[in-house]
Image 1 (cartoon, rainbow, N blue to C red):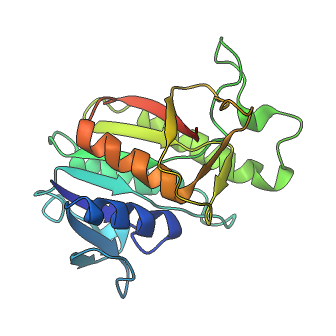
Image 2 (cartoon, rainbow, N blue to C red):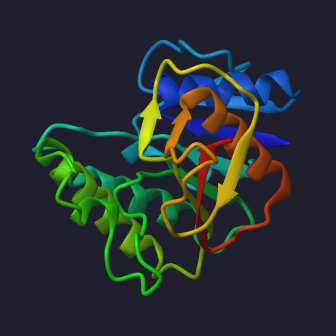
Length: 209
């Protein structure tokens, strides 16, 4: 399979590239500057300048974009919209590295993790920006998208256990009552989803076993 990882130099992007390369995928890193990932091929371009021609030959595109400063938070929506526009009407699948704040905590799907009293105030703007982007993504029926939310405790330097639980729209705890996953295990789940393609037009979530 041919896949492109957008923002491949980020922590999540690099691990997704590594996982895919190790499985024998043909991986292209989309980066602004020097490629720091294990990808064999590189497109040096700003995400917002990508064209349909750039992404035409891929089976799947992974969106590993992230923004954290107040002035760049709206780019969660604009970057995702741009990638959707570029891939609109094609068979190329778009897989999005999502957030946990928008996972539901009740069966009615009216309350989210980020609504909780114990949700850190400092992360609320980020959670809100990512939830907005997800809401807009749900309106797109012209793109074969899948949005993958990590567990609540998303650990950049956590170990690669090789085991995870695939869940849906609701915050799911493991047998120890934890909502936790490492970036490395998340990368396994992402590449598994690229291989299987079982959740087109859906948001799914993953947690460590």
